[in-house]
Image (cartoon, rainbow, N blue to C red; front, side, top):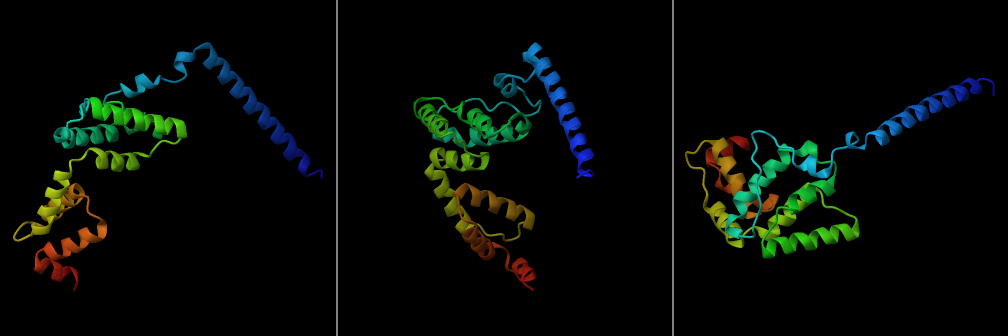
Amino acid sequence: MLSQTPDVNTLLHNMHAQILALTTQLAELQANPTAAAPSVEKKFNKKVENVADPGTFEGDRAQFAEWWIKLQIWVEANWDVFADDFEVATAVLSPLKGPVASQYAQIRLQECYTAGVWPTWDNLKIEIEKYFKPQAERDWARQQIHTFKQGNMRTDDFVTRFLALSIQGGLGNEHAVELLECNVNPHIAEQLYI
């Protein structure tokens, strides 16, 4: 029992020091609340010098692909600004304007707020693409990928273009791998499987 007494005293002393430090920090924050944390607006207005603000999406599905890639790059470049899924979702859904896009954003924000659950960035990307990506674009990419052969194209160029079509077409991994195996230059495939 005596051997535990110094540990308890040390523990109490450390706890007292932590409480004192936190009390001092709280007093400083209360004295100067603007220095405590930047407002959400200030956080979202932070700009990365070489990544342009993607602007708003007015709901024209033909313009979706260009706006969407710009927004994704902007989010990734500003990733450190976002504290949590709420801030990412708010920053991504807020630029949706126009009758259809703004209604979608309003309903989605209300659903998240009511449930108290905000989608992760990866889930939000999938959801928005399903809602706004034109079906014709997916169909075109799927048709292209079925007839896209490597021929004499460099392997890295072929794989890059193939992956872009696969993502654009929304193909599952298994199906994309099967198509890749069929469409790659037979000599390359032979070397891979030896």
